[in-house]
Image (cartoon, rainbow over all chains, first blue to last red; front, side):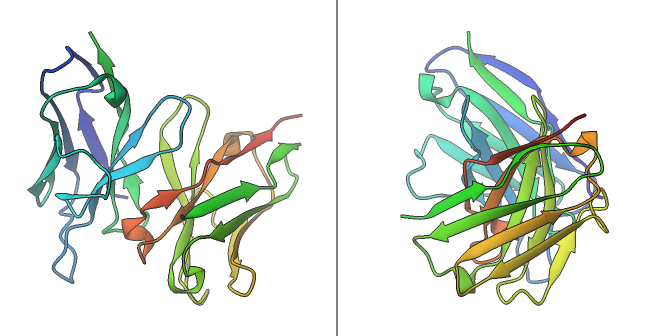
Length: 112
Length: 119
């Protein structure tokens, strides 16, 4: 199985400051159709996961533009330009290129 | 508005069975692949199973292959997960996941149904 490794696992951030989460895969996530199926999910406390980003850098409808995704191959990053209180939660990267689809361990973002 | 409503969870003894259902609405169910993802209490996420839009293709994680069966009824807009030979480590919140249109790009998950395997 493809192992997804996130860092850091805990991310204390001051309101209004930027935040960055790294996600590395044990194999390339480039698929035969030319796409790279790397998603980012946000799980707020007590809620189900919500997709923020798909195919590395495409933001879902309704996701604030302070969220951005980047990367290629095996190395990916989720960035929040200015953290707001509503961003508190756990963030997961997920690869959809190789079955079984796998998730990172999760990064818990909290406000300092 | 997309809605996925999971039900059928509960407390079951080790070795027992449960069938989870997911009622879908707000999108064309028959054109989307679907899946089940689980989250053990206080833990991360594990993709359990997926099924193609027609139901002709099914996929399982090694941890459940041979014990779980995914299926769908496109006439009822409903996804199922039959779980047999349940073990304590199957205890989790089970989410229904919608494909966009394939689950490698799953774009919406339900609120989940809790399965507890304990004697």
